[in-house]
Length: 272
Image 1 (cartoon, rainbow, N blue to C red):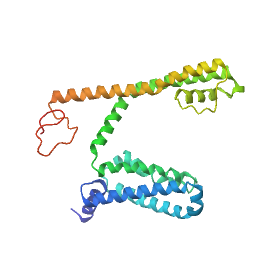
Image 2: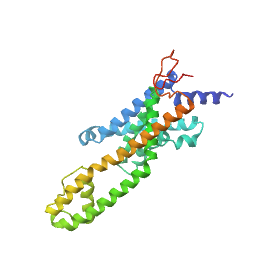
Image 3: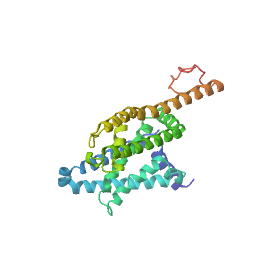
Image 4: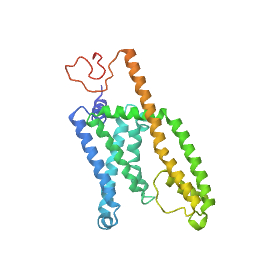
């Protein structure tokens, strides 16, 4: 084993693992730098603060960007599968967290997109060993993916509904009441059906208000239906998981157990 390979392995262990003091320190410093860099971007967006400390924040912004660029290069260097890391969730976030500063040289203002760095703080789950939260997140994601077709069909139905209602409101209210076009009516329908209600456009006629009242009532389904679809899918997945566990006679492993425990606290199965 060559010394360079040994160094690469040690570096990979510090960057990607969390079970040693150097690895934990690396993650803590990284998370602190991420929070500070996002805080600098937020402060720099305040006109009064930017006028006084703009140049100082600009220097800090480049400092953090170069720091994260070096870190990204190190991750690419030590990654066992560079393509897999580069296309992973954290790999994409790591890259997107440094690009806005470079783009700001050609497109001023894009540096404020650096707030995407906050996604990198999700690594704190690994640092605190909150793996079960990650598993729960995957559970919710799988449920949403399984019900995606139903949700897409429902969203298509909503899109058709607001298009028809928007066109009707344009015909009923007209330009004299603020509905200058069909897209304007569709915008009002979306704001109304989602129960946001900005109030910048209001129906004035009796017929228009009656149609608005009907749309407001329908608006409750916009929240209820997708929630019900995902909840039903989660319940179905949970039943399948429990059925598989009973079939395979294995512990569910959904909770932490005492070191001297012989049986699972939840499912009662023997701990292997």
